[in-house]
Amino acid sequence: MIREINIGGVLFAPMLGYALVAALIWYALRYLLMRWRLYRFVWHPPLFNTALYVILLSVLVVATL
Image (cartoon, rainbow, N blue to C red; front, side):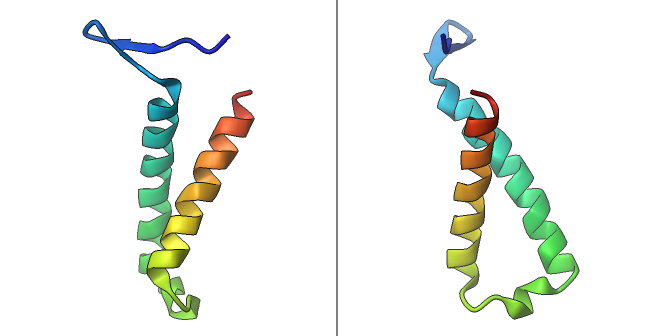
């Protein structure tokens, strides 16, 4: 059973935790992609960033089932 996250008496959905972890990984990957200049191979960087975040979030959710 999935439990809520309790922070200071306020209950949050577990999806919030997954989203925060995915965002941290996404920022790190984005930094590496910029540092290694791999964005020059990407046609539409905002679309690529969105897809990368959705993929990371999906992998985290499926991995914790």
